[in-house]
Structures are given as C-alpha cells and as structure tokens.
Image 1 (cartoon, rainbow, N blue to C red):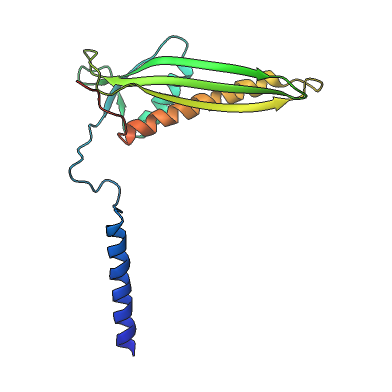
Image 2 (image 1 turned 120 degrees about the horizontal axis):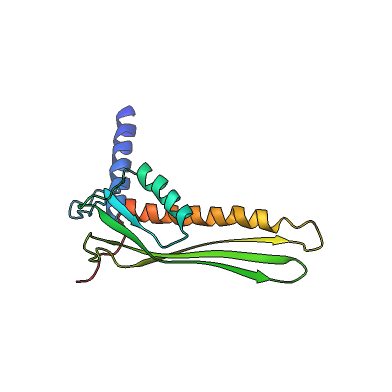
Length: 169
C-alpha cells in the first residue's frame, strides 16, 4: 500500500508540472532568447528644479546596481517632461489632487534614442475642512515628496526590469 501512495504522489506531481508547462508558466529570466540591454552606467539629464527627483533616482538606481557616471560609455537617462499638477475641488470639504507626470527616455552619449519615451504618473489626494485649523501646506509638502518618490521608484523598476520599449530606427 505504501508503494501505491508513492506512485500516486509521483503521478500527481508530474501531472501538476505538465499543467504548469502547458499553460505557459516559466520562471522569470528563463527565456534564453531574451538578451536584455543592461543599463549599468547612467548619466542623469534633468530639467531645472527637479533636484528632489534627481536625488531619489540616484538613491534607487544605485541600490539596483546602476553606476551613475559621466563616462563616455554611460547611457543618458533624460527626463523629457516634468509636470506637477495641483487640482482643488471645493465642497463641504476641500479636496486636493496632486499629480506628477514624468516622461523619460534613455539615450546614448550622442543623443541617439535607445528607448522610446515612457510617461509615468503618480497621484495622491487629501481632504481638509477649511473651518478647522489649516495644515494644508504641511500635508501637501509631505504628499509631494511621496509622489516624487513613487515616480522615482517606477522609473527605477522599469530600468532594472528592462521593460522599456526599444527605439524604432
């Protein structure tokens, strides 16, 4: 009887494995035909007044193993558009919507596009009652930092995962 239980376990394991293979399951990074372009050296090209985003990107990119360098063989992470928006919705409570949209691409040193431009957006909202003590400025400053941090993490994840579409020739 013990042998029958073992055989049943083996058949069940093989059946489940075949089911996973049949549905297209594969471990991440196991595709031998995909040879990603590794951005191991980057230079940041940022518009004016984006120092907080630049600091966050420096921290997160360095943590993933990207070396920030001005060397000739380094790719350029260019921020094409940096658009913060603040939308105020008035009612019984005042609601504030903070949104940051950032468009970026990766180029070589000569300015030739390596990836297509990618646009990322992060947003946060908060409410306050005008009749009470107004802590609007403190809360807004905090949430602006959170939104910038979120965008920096999104950019870093996409670069580290190499999920950026290649530029069309």
